[in-house]
Amino acid sequence: MPNEGLISVGASGKDFGLTSLERQAIALNVAGYSHQESTERLGISQQDLRLQLEWICNKLCVSNQFELLLFALYHQLVDTCAGSESPESAHEIELTIINVAPIEQS
Image 1: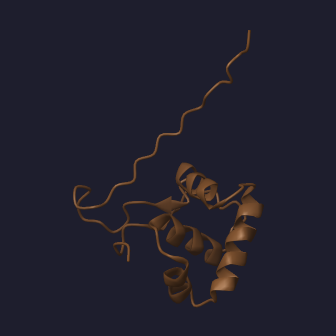
Image 2: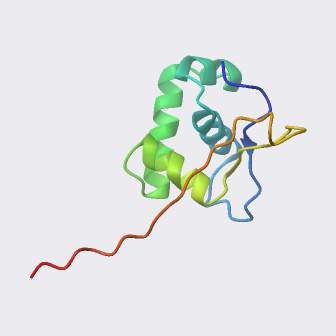
């Protein structure tokens, strides 16, 4: 199970119309919890979690859970170091998103 307290629901200021349950599901997904672990923590069935994640992807116009992870980190929907006393002790997630211009064909 992932380390407790290292990922939490963020406060980016923009909620994208997400409910509290949706934001919690995203945070657990980003933290690396399995679907079973997430359902136990959220108190919902695995089928409900799958539907919830599918609905979240549709709502945010992302194609899959990997894009959802990138979206959540980019828009700071989750706080990746919440609750850790020391950044050195926390498993830090580093992500660089690069805007790449299309290659012009000659």
